[in-house]
Image 1 (tube, rainbow, N blue to C red):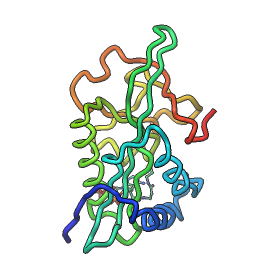
Image 2: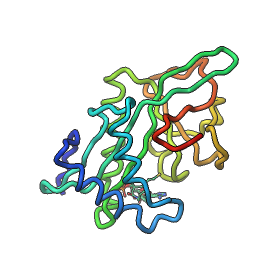
Image 3: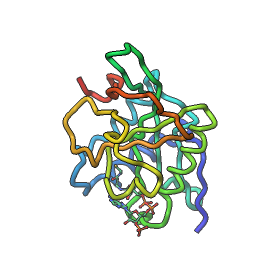
Image 4: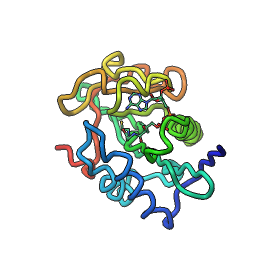
Length: 179
Ligand SMILES: CC(C)(COP(=O)(O)OP(=O)(O)OC[C@H]1O[C@@H](n2cnc3c(N)ncnc32)[C@H](O)[C@@H]1OP(=O)(O)O)[C@@H](O)C(=O)NCCC(=O)NCCS
């Protein structure tokens, strides 16, 4: 099976909406609104077109990943450190388990590093992301602005020591609907 990863275009928006909705349909820890979040994030200042990626099989979009700009705020130092949020990733149910999610993550990491980002943060399945280098945020002294199990709050560095001396709380843009 040939998997082709490319940047999303406006013509893909409907297919991406449908695939996110379908992929999350039976997910226990989902509000089933991830497709609407992606629509909002595309219109937000944190949107980076190069980090909105589609996985295609035979010219059909079957997977999607989006990384958008966020920052980590250190109240003591009054410093903000740029980072990226992985929200969201989805693969059509009949295409899951074939390495497509992995390919999307690896390609997103590669492009994010090229764009000079140093880290990616996410809230997600504790058993899935460690294989791509994600560890719990608590190990770095970085926390989410809401109460969630530590094991689901993860990050990865895109180059060594990207987060050296970076501690604080993740600040999500208003599109995430987090106060
Ligand atoms: C999570 C998701 C993007 C993974 O994509 P994928 O193409 O199926 O993943 P890959 O084929 O690259 O990897 C498959 C491996 O991941 C594991 N995996 C898939 N979903 C998992 C989950 N929710 N928790 C733990 N492991 C998971 C599979 O068991 C498989 O493991 P194996 O290689 O040891 O057999 C996809 O399953 C999906 O769209 N799920 C519904 C939406 C969702 O949950 N998105 C993520 C929100 S955090």
